[in-house]
Image (spheres, rainbow, N blue to C red):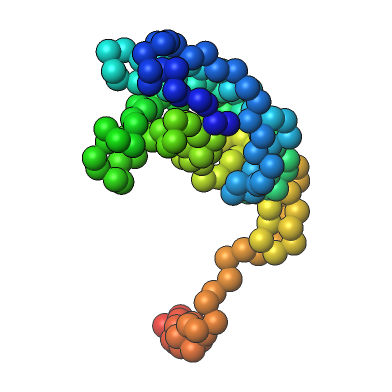
Length: 172
């Protein structure tokens, strides 16, 4: 969403209220967003310091990283960033500010970046999720399997054979 900042830059207003729906159509790290994100907030000007404050609740659907069950949830987001006019900000790569370009403030790009930072790298259906058996694929939360998971490394077969052979010699 682009906001016309000319009234605030001209000193005609010190507050711009915001409320809109932000649609994330793409998946991010395997997370889907089934509904548009409701964003509320405001832009304030306090003696020349402009600040954007937003809140949102993000509905998401993803899979458990261990058992692949579908998880849905809500992530609350609080976003606060300073705003600067491109004429007044001298430093180019400053992530502390959102730049006003041609009298317009684009808030979707920094909001998307903040959403990316807020999401955890993996989701679990529950803290003690046991996951899937790596051999047979059964969900270990629902039942147990009889797979042997501890197999010796085949690179050490010669050593294991040698140890077994000498173990028999010691027992004689």
